Image 1 (cartoon, rainbow, N blue to C red):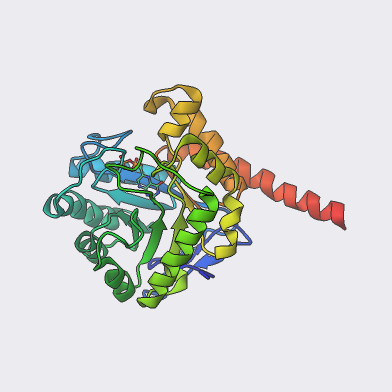
Image 2 (cartoon, rainbow, N blue to C red):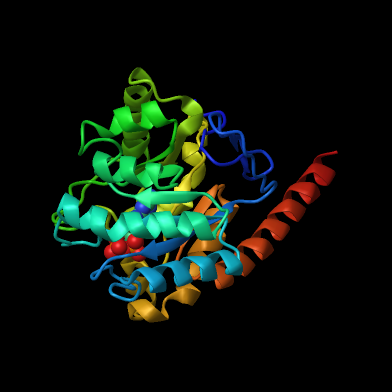
Length: 307
Ligand code: HH2
């Protein structure tokens, strides 16, 4: 499954052994061969857990997006509804009001693919019309029945993220028999659902949803065993940036978790993540570059030893 994901806007080469994300509908093709991609986060929200309220105004949000691209973001994820634990849902009109002018302005200002972080089909459609090429649905097509049709009709890329519960309830008592096995089964079912509704395999990116209905040990197990998702054949997106499980490990407030984030990003890259969703693009680009270089040398050395 998912041998190559179709994301309108570009051919996004991932790790060298990775399938390519190929845009099938709109011709233009961007290549980032041999390494994972960095997705920079642009939150147009008053209440996001790490940067809520900082980029609410249009000009500030656009300037932030441009800065992230200058720092090395390969794609941008623009979101107008916080999904932090306990977050209140945002009305459709308010999400549209916040997100769409920013998507439209950023699409004019940068050439990298834009993802819209939303679970609402109307927001996804308006964002695609305004220039977004990927929909990042943290409910994996489960909350809005229209969403699957928007993705199938437009050919947009789709991130299917796992979450146990809802942002309002997810951290109350998350529980799994085998967190990787349970999420693999969820991915299999979601992929079947997407394909049955006309989405193509190469449009799909999977995300285990670090911090979404997971205890510390669940998050650590997922990161440690990321390779167990390889059999699904889809690029994996991983979002660890500044998250509270890191705060549990290092006892640092959210603005001081860059070092902890760096360690988790390095491990995720080493274990095959294809897209890293991060706030601190400049720093994580360096982490990624070093990890990829060591990784490459590791496989060269392994091959030499087995020759
Ligand atoms: N994490 C957040 C939001 N969206 N989407 C995907 N696919 N994967 C993630 O791990 C993920 C996500 C949380 O980060 P942030 O956007 O900074 O916070 P908030 O949801 O409070 O706006």
